[in-house]
Length: 236
Length: 236
DNA sequence: ATATTCGTATTTATCATACAAATAAATAAT
DNA sequence: ATTATTTATTTGTATGATAAATACGAATAT
Image (tube, rainbow over all chains, first blue to last red; front, side):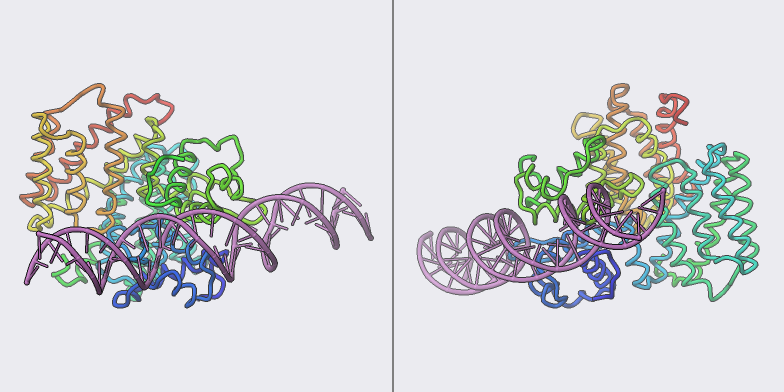
C-alpha cells in the first residue's frame, strides 16, 4: 500500500485499489475477496469493506454474496468523478482517450465561454483575467505554463454561472494534463497560444457571446485536429 | 427508512440519506453523528459507516474525528453521479436548475449528434432510428412519450462513440425528466417535436455533420428559450 | 439422457464490542 | 490576554460471531 496518501486507511485503500483497477491489474486475475484484500493489504475487514463500498459508489465495483467482488464494465464507471479522473491520468491514457477528452472539451468550453460572456458583468470574469496574467507570466518563466492554463479554463467554467459546467473543472484540468503528456515534446511555452487565450478573455469581458464561443472553439479544435492527425485512421 | 429500495441495508441507508440531504433536511440542524444515525435508523454502526463512506465517495459528506460528519458544500457534490441525479430529480428542482440542465444539454448534445453523423456507418446509429420509431408510436398512444424521447437522446450519445458523452446518458435522461415536470402542462404529445427529431436522425444517418449539430442545437435551444422566458429576469 | 430439485459450501451482509487516534472545546497556567 | 494542557467526544481500526444470499454440484425425478 502507498505511503500516507489519503486521510485514513479506508481512503488509502480505496485510492490504491482504484489505481490498480484502472491500471488494468485485474484484467486476467479474478478480483480478490474481502478476506483476501484484508490479508494482502494487512487491513481490517471493516476498512476493506468501506473501501470497496467507496468504489461501489463510483460505479467501479459491485459485490454480492457468494459471487464476491467484481469489477463493473467500464461503461458504468463514473468518469466525471475527481478520483476516477486522477486514476485515469496516472494510468497513462493513450490517444483514443485523449481524443475523447478533447472532443468533450470542444463541446463544453465554447458554450461555457459564451455563457461567461453573457454574464460579463459578473465578478467571476476577473478571475479569467488573473489566470491570463499567470499565463503571460509563464511565458517569462515566472509561473507554471500548465497550471496557469488549467486556471484559465477553470475560471471560464466558473464564470459560466452554471453548476454543471462549474463541476467540470477537474475534467478540464485532467484533459489538459493528459494533453500535455502527448504534445509538450513538440512545443514548449507558446506565445501564439497565449494571445489566442487573451482574445477569448477579451471577447468574454466585452460580452461578445458569439465571438467568445467561436474563439474558444477554434482554440480547442486546433488541438483536436493535431490529435486526430496523429491517430491511425482505424481509430476514427 | 424506505421499504426495500437498494440491494442491502448499506445501500438503502445511503440512498435515504442522499435523498434527505438533497431535500435540504439538514439545512438548519447539524448532521447526526455515526452513533445517532445508527440509533435513528436502527442499523449497526458498520452499515452506517459504509453508507457514510459511499456518500463521501460522491463528494456529499466528509467526516473527521471529534468534528463528526459534515455535509460538503454543494460545489463538491458529484452532480454527474447517477444516484445524485436521481436525488436531484426527487428534490423537485426549480427553474434555475432546469436552466442549468438544458444549458448543459445545449453544449453536449449538438456535438454528440455531430460526432454520431461522423460515424454514420456505425451500427449504433440504427438505435437512434428505433428510438425515433418509438416516439412516433407514442404519438399514437402506443408508447410512452417521455421514455421514447429519453431513448432517442441516449442513443445519440451512445452513437457519438465517445466514452464521456456515452456516460452522460443518465444526465440527459434526468434533464428530460426535470423538463417535463415544468413544461408538460403546456403541451402534451407534440407532432412538431417528433418531426424535428426525425430531421436530426436523417442528418446523422446521411453523415451530415454540420446539419446534425445545427438541428440538434435548434431543438434544445427552443426549450432553453421557453425556460428563460419563464424565469424572472434576476436569475439571468 | 435431461431436467429439476435440493443440499452445501462460500462469500458478503449485519451486528456487537473494544480500543486507538484525532481533535474541538474546556480548563489551567503563564 | 495568551498559551499550554487536559478532557471529552467522535471517528478510525480491529476482531469475532452469526445471518443471509447464492453459485455450484449432487441427488433425484422425469
